[in-house]
Structure formats: C-alpha cells, structure tokens
Length: 564
Image 1: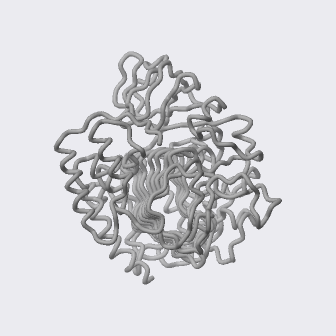
Image 2: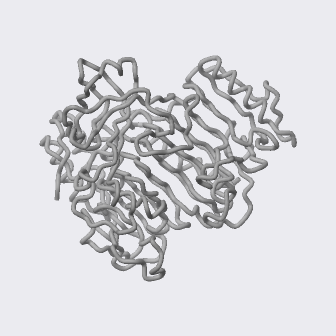
C-alpha cells in the first residue's frame, strides 16, 4: 500500500482525546474496529503518512463549526410580502421576490423572508430564475413542512442554449455578478478568462499549506485562489498508477489529466503563499501548475423552504430539455461557506448544484415527488459537503449524490437513497472523495460522457455503504471489457481508480479485488461508523457539538416534514 500524505506531529492531548473517542465507539457490539482506521490513528500520532487522506475539512467552515443559526445573526429582514408578493393566490410573485433580493443586496446583508403559504414563480416572468450576487444574503422560509413556505414553479426554466440540454437555469442561483457558470473548460472554472495567473516554481507535497509562485504580489488582497494543473499525460501515473485505459476514453487518452483545487489564502510573503488548509495532492512544478484568483461570495444560505417544481411526467433520461433540466431547484456557484438546510425539493429534475465553490454544505434536506434527473451535484469545487439527504421520490432520482468535473476533497455523509440507480460520479477528473454511511440502491448510478471517463481518479473511499439493490458477483471497478448486456455500448460500467471499500454491507455483493486499492469487511459494518465524524473529532481534539445537534434535529425534522 502506498502512503503519500506527510503529516506533522499532533499533541499528546489531541491523541488522548482521539483514543478515548475511539475506545467509546469501539465498545458497540456487533461491529469491529476497521484496521485501516487503526493504521490511520497510529500513523497520524507518529507524524507519518496515512493510508487515506483526511476528508474532514469538507463542509461549512472546514467542518469545525456548524451552519450559522440565522435567527441570531441579527440580519435585517426583507419580507417578500412587503415588496408585493401575496401568498396563496394565482398571481406570479417573481417581480416582488426580485425586489426583495435587490433590497437585501443593496443593504449589504439581509434575510429575504418568505412567510408561510405558497408563492408562485415562473409564470410568464423570471423564467431564467433569480440571481443573488452578494455575500451575507439568506433566503429563508417559515418551514418546509406542513403550514410552512412553498415556492412553486408554474412553468419550466427556459434557455436558448443548444450545447447541452441540461444547462437550464436554476430557480435560484447565488453567484458573483457577471460570472458565466454555463460554460465549462478544463482550466477556467466558469467561462470567464482569468485576469492574471502565476506559475508554480517549486514543488509542494500533499498535506502542505505552502505553495511557491513566480509572482505572489499580484494576489495581495485576494481571499481565494485556484490551483490549476493543465491537461498533461505525464501526470497520469501520479493520479492513476499504471492502470490501462479504455480505448473510447478520448480525453484522457489524447490530453491526459487536469486538476484543480480552490484554497483560502492566509498570508503572502515574497513569493510564498500560505494556505489555510492542506493541499489535496502533490503539486509538481514539472506538470505546469499555476494559480489564478478565484472570485467568491460568502456566507449565503437557503433555509426552511419547500421548493416545488411542476414536473408530472414519467422521467426519461436525455429525452429533452424539460426532462433533463427544465425543473431545477437551487445553485451555489463560486460560494465560500454557503449552506442549504432544512429544505424540501418536490417534482424537480435536479435539486441542488454546488459549482466552483469551497466549504459549502447541503445539510438536512429531502427530495420527493416524481423521479427526476439528479439530486445534488458538486462540480469544479473543493471540500464541499452533502449530509443527511433523503431521496424519497417515487422511483429514486436517476443520479444520486454526485462529485465530478475536477471536484476534489468532497464528502457525502449519511445519505438515504434506497431507490433509483445508485450513487453518482459524473466523470471529469474527480479526486479524493468520501462517500460515508451512504445507503443506496446499487453502484450503477454513475454518469458522464464516456469520452470523459474514468469516473474517479485516486482517492475514492466508500465507507460503510449499505446496498438495497440486488447483489452483484465480482463487481469490477475497472473493467476493460464491454458490458455483457450491451456489448456495442461505449459505456462499460463504473471506472474508479483503485477505490477503497470498507464496511460494505446490506447484500452479498462481492468485488474483483484485483482492481481495488484496499478492501476490508465486505458484508459487515465497521467502526468507527462514520469516517468523516471520526477524522473530524481526531483533528479538532473532540467531537464537535454540531454533529450531534444536526443528527438530533434530523431525527425529528425529516419525520415531521415527511408527513406533508
């Protein structure tokens, strides 16, 4: 096994707290301590590289604090009814909602509040959705359950783009002003040329917080930067080992691999930039890494709202614009420390998109109603987080929780999706992803064009996954043979570079272990139950209060809201 993470020594107090926590968790009956976790702790305590990276930096405030309580933020309230919106009538409320949003933005911060009742959007107006371009804005309702707030999309979202059917706008989008988030390319997250860049001039190790650049002075005043490795074939061994690729993978075969990471700047001294949190990969000068400014807005949220689409058909994948993306919920693009909490999404094609963002959390939410295209997608960003998500649609969403398209360090935690096709990795050079305590149908919900595969590079960990679908014998995460059920299809199944499978249970599925990076306890859960929780408790020295608070809130909230 290859250990590549360089870690500094931790304090004896921190080690003691972690060991106490570990012993308490291990006392649970019927489960065994995972050997890889024991190795992780011992290697960490000795200041040595660990077998898996520390995924615990994902989520709001790098997991160190919970999502803010908006009731104590002392933000001014901008009630949409004060701007002309009327609940429970048949008249569209789009113009009034837009006025309330603009007023909050002009103030510099605020809560755009939706009282209880139904508000109508997309009825002959605002069919391209609403944009919020400022930091410190929260859209908040009176609750997503019975007697709460509903925002109802009368008609589907319109767009005039022919490149992709699924690029339809979302109902609400947080993003910096004038940022085009519909156009993607490998070295430019959102279709807008970087104003300036600077080359990496010295290597930095995975786990380091220091990078060395040609000209750091031009980044003084910036809060965030993006590290970019342009496409190159020389780096393939670093990200894939010596695995053979499939012939139809045009992008990787012709261009190689690209990578990026978004980071927050702590300080700049001469040509050395210190980052707030560790690198997720080795940054090697020879691969052409460079940095660019990464514009973000911060502290944005959606809370306590029931978003309702009007999709009533039986979903057909890629049938047309309406099926693929006509009814979409909310998007956060280039957001730092954003959140979507205690919301319900009904009859939508896709619920949530987190694009080019960092430390943004989707926490305690439900999707229900008719089956649609996708659930939550985390793309082009770093260390984002989806936790306590329940898929209660009639057939399960076609795609489950997704991390893809240059995403790195993202986490899906305690997901319940027993129907549908399974969890998703939508290709595009994804790295360092943890799916933790995920309950899903099977492992075939992946997507993305076959030309952009594989679905994931090194660093994928599946921890205590519970399968509800039929068992599979000798499941292969790197098959180089066509599928038996459709030998002419260029889609040959999931392709993940040497995944780590720990605590897989629920069925008697077995794996082709030759193509796994690590496997332990197939058929039985392991301890700690959640790798994310255990790593976070170890890193900060104790189990953060917010974890138990949201678990307790979720236990009550999703049952109450589910009655609606």
